[in-house]
Length: 462
Image (cartoon, rainbow, N blue to C red; front, side):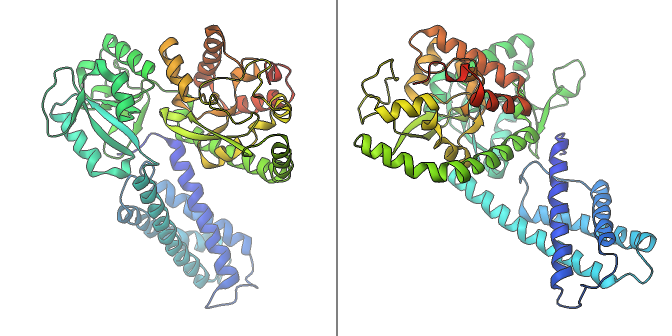
């Protein structure tokens, strides 16, 4: 089944062209058969190779979402494209390359290109298998209903772990029996999501596709912080009168995302992740590398305890992660339950300086590199606050649909620090929701700029 993520194909094309150009240069400089160093028109050969691959890709661009097929299927797919590439390559060579062009050069780099893809994808698949085995790449899924189609869908998820979904069980209002575990009823979703660490609900029963039932279901899932996917069956969403406008592909089935936000799109998430890696890597290399030993000495001289403060925070999809900061307080037993107060006696003198200048947040760039956080996003809260405010603020957990950030839209608008009154957290969530719904890359750049130079970003710091 084809994915309608055009950006996925574009990234695969860029990846193919990267491997192709590596192959051309490797053969040009290291051929075991001929010396191509004096080959005339080298740039023309390179252009010819890229145009040929582009045409082959246009003629056969079949790719599946992520690595959801087997390795042998992937090899079969690019082997077919390779067979298409060869005649295109030599046909264009006859038309555009100089008379007497070196056919051996074309054969060598295309053979190298094919072998390189086989090897590279082998290691990519091994890496994916490692991630699946460790549970890094899974959504923990419950299926709403225990009808025949639901059981077929459950078996599909169990038999194909590379799809990225780990089936926890089924939810039912009728408590029907099945071969798989029935976790409970839909009304118990808040409790069940905590117990079974659910972060996604699959719905294939058409009874839930009505406007009224959809609104009820979305409200319940938004309050719980669970993502919803409608499984497209029997052509229901192909009807133009129905909702099906935004679809995702997971190889064997299509899904409709009724909670779609910009960062649900693979291409936008990839752009944001690339920026996160480059930006955080630069900060760690050019700032953190020399500032860390200075701060470590000052922290150690100022008070007893570790240099870093580590605390569990709530991350994307309600997953818990370990957040790093420079320690700004004396070691105490209230750090996981009590926020810093005005004139808090626990804050050290060097800690007060770090909090006012945001230096204490620098170690979180390590979290960004590890993939737990983003440079920009809703600020991660301690677990007690997640539990507390999710009961007080409706749809509070929707802010966990994206990665938490070192800085965010709420913070540059002055909503940071102590939340001793409920309205302060409500305003944070309001700004976070606006960020989720309207995200774009240049907004992230604006937030970073305001974090560094905006006046409101330093309000309530300390």
